[in-house]
Length: 225
Image (cartoon, rainbow, N blue to C red; front, side, top):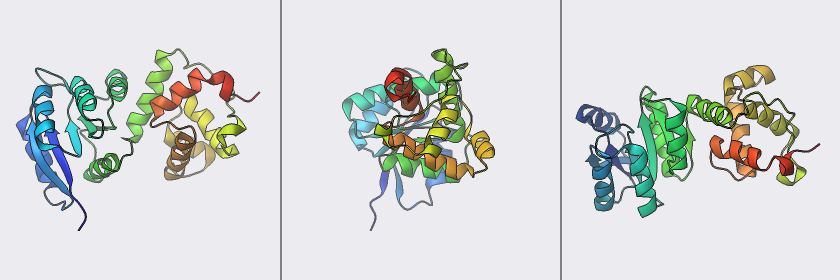
C-alpha cells in the first residue's frame, strides 16, 4: 500500500483549516496529522508530527509564514513547504522562494490543482501555478531593471538546449506568459510548460526565479554571440 503523505496545516483562520481538511478528507494518500494557527505553532507542530508537507499561510500573528518557512528549512530541509495564500504580490512570492518554499499556490485555485501541488512538492519537485510563475518572472525582471532588455538570448551548446528551447527561453526571459508563448508558437500551454521544465532541468535550477537569476548572473557565459 502506498505511503500516505503526512500534512501539517498552518493558517490563523480555523474555518480555512477546516475547509482544507474537508477538501482532503476523501484523499486516501493524504493525511492531515497536525494544525497550527501561526508560525511559532507551525515550528512546534513540525517537530511533533514530522510531516512530509507543510501547507503554509503567509499573513499570521506572532510569526508569519515566510519566517516560519525559513525556520522549518533550517531545522529540517527535507520537509516540504507549500505556500497557500491569497496574496499574488511579487514581493511575497519572491521572498517565499528565497526562504525555501517548495511551492506557491493561491487560495482561489481549484481542487485538482491543489492536489497536484501537494503531490508535486511531496515528490521533491517544485510547484508554482502559471500565474505565480509569471509573477516570479516579471517581479525578477522589474527588480533587476531588465524589463526592457530585448537582447537575443542564445544558450551555449554546453547546456545542450535545442533550438526550440532557446526560442522559448528567450520569451520567458522577456517576461512573456506561457499562454502568450503558446499562442505565438502555435503550441499548447502544456507543451510550453514541458519545454520550460526541460530548460530548467538542463540549467540545473529549481524554479523560474532561479532561472532568471542564473541567466542574469552568467549572461556572458551563456549568451552565444
